[in-house]
Image (cartoon, rainbow, N blue to C red; front, side, top):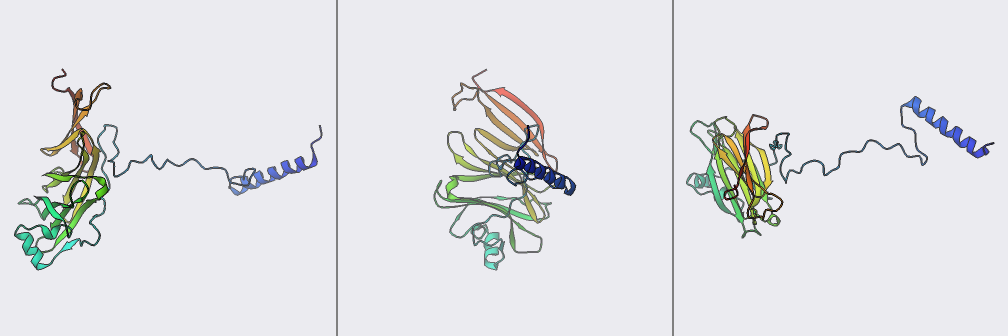
Length: 270
């Protein structure tokens, strides 16, 4: 059967384009003139969100996060060097270390006798919970320098519903400088919130763990972290999990290593 002349021309034109594309290394255009589709890129939702906690490795231990910015409220300076403010801080008044219009909530003196730096961690609140703002700031002062400098900070906006921020401290990195474990309490029946570990060095502080959880607790145990998580069976009411998983994590210098993990029956269920 003889092909129509216009079809023969179209086939010849397509072959010519294919040959030209092979010789030039460029993909041949499709029937509409668009280039062939490239391999699909990862979905934007495939990567873990920094606000919901770090990704977990094969062991289930959270992986470290890159250091966030010093996130102070707009207009707040990262340096406190006014002589009157420095004197007030030395006398125990931490008001110069929190945003204007806010109130210091809790504080922790992170300095140790052999540490090369002075450190103060202070949490603050502006407004009533849960509608108000909350935050945490870690300040450092170098030997011989009267000024205090913010080396780490986060600010929780009112819409996040944080009732308060509590803190604990201990040397989790083995360098002799106290590190910080904080928890942003969002309340609810599941005691939900976000845990963070902030590791301090001379002149810097870095967030090395962030994990948003419910029905869980993280504590400093010696130089390790102990995590206790509720384990629910399908028919368990929210008040009463069947078991608890206890995991011990240790910082290796670049990641969290799972030292141990065990599941035990909840009291009264065994």
